[in-house]
Length: 524
Figure (cartoon, rainbow, N blue to C red):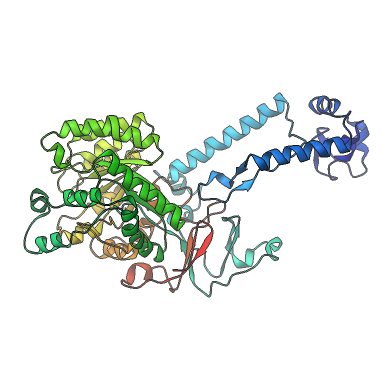
C-alpha cells in the first residue's frame, strides 16, 4: 500500500474518502478495505515521486499562483476581500456514481431553496400553513441581548447572546452599548449624479406653476441636462460626493444611482462612471440604472422615435458592453415617453439580459406598471395613479412598488398612491428618497420613512421594511442586503434608540451609533 495512503488515514469514526468506509479506531479498516479505484489510479502515478519531489512541485505551483495574481473572494461578493488561491496537491477525487448522487442531492436542495424563496417573496403559502416561521417574513426581532459573529466581512453567527457557541469565545468582542441592531438601509431610487441645482423651480412652483408648466418652460429635467453636460466627470463626482456622504452617515449601505441627465452617449457614460467611482471611493454597494429615456433632449425636439432608436441601438448596448449598467429605467408619462416607446426600450434591455424598472403612473394612469410587470420589472416607482389592473400585474410578477413621498411632498400632490390596495394584494412596498435636483432634493432616508407613515399612512413595520428588505428587493439585492442572516455580507447599523418605531418617529435626528458597511466599521 502506498505510503501516502497510509499517512492519510481518517480520524476514527470519520468517513475515509480514500477507502470508501468509516475509519475504525484500531486502524483495522486500513488492511481490510483497500483503496477505491480512482485513488489506486492516482497513487499509482505518484508513487515514484519522493517527498522532496512533491515539495518542489508544490512550491513551484504556489509561486505560479502568486506571480499570476490568482485570487478569489467568498460568495463571489464584488465588495469582498480578495484572498490568494489555496492549493492542495491531493485533489478531491469523486467517481461517476458518487458524483451522480451528489449532483442529484444538490439539484434537489437548489429546487427546494428556490421554491421557498419564491414563496417567501410571493404568496407566502408556506408561512400561512406554518411550514416556515413567521419571523422569516415579518422581520420579527430577537428579544433581549443579541450577539453577532463576523468573519471575513460576513455574518458567521447571529442570535441570542445566551446561545452563542463556546468556540467563538476567543474572538475579540465589541460592546454595542445597548444599541438596537438592524440591517443597513437601502436607498433604491435616486438621481444622485447631476450638475447644478434647481432651487429657482422650487420658487416657481410656490408661485403657482405646475410640474408640467415648469417642464414646458424649459425647466425641469432639461435644465439639469444642460448643467450635467457642461460639467466634467470630476466636477460631477465632487458635487455628488457630499450628497452620498449625507445618506451614508444615516446608515445607508446600498444605493441605486440613475443616469438620465446626460441624454447623449458621452454624458450618460459620464454619469454612470461617476456612480461606479462613488461606490469604490466610499465602499458602498451602488447599483447603476440607465435612464437614457428620461426626457427628450433639445436636439431631438419633435423626433421622439429617433431618440428612442438612439437609446436602444447605440447608447444602451455600448454602455452595457462597458459594464456600466445594472438595470434599465424609463420615464413613462404624458411629458415623457409613450407605452410603445417604453416597450421598445424594455425589449432592448431584455435582449442584453438586463432587468427593467419604470417611472410609472406618477402624473396619470398610462398603464406603464402593467407593461413593466409583463417584462418582470424589479420595481414600478411613484405609482400615485396606479390602477387595480396595474396592482394585479405587479402582484403576479413579484414587482416591488417604490413609494417616493419626497416628490409627492415637494410637488404638493394630493393624489395618494393606492396603499390599501397594494397592502391587500401583498405587493411589497419600498420607500426611497428619489433624490433629484427638481422634485425631491432629499438627503434623509429616515425622513422619507416618516413621510411614508404620515403622508401615505404606512405602519411603522411597513416603513422600516420599505427602507430595508423591500428596497433591497427593488434592486435585486435581497440576498445580500436589507436583512441580517448567516452568510450575508456585514451591512448593519447599531441605532442609539430604544425601539424600532423611533427610526420613523424622529426627523432631523440621526441616531446611527455605529455603521458597518461591507464588513468595515465606518464613523457616521
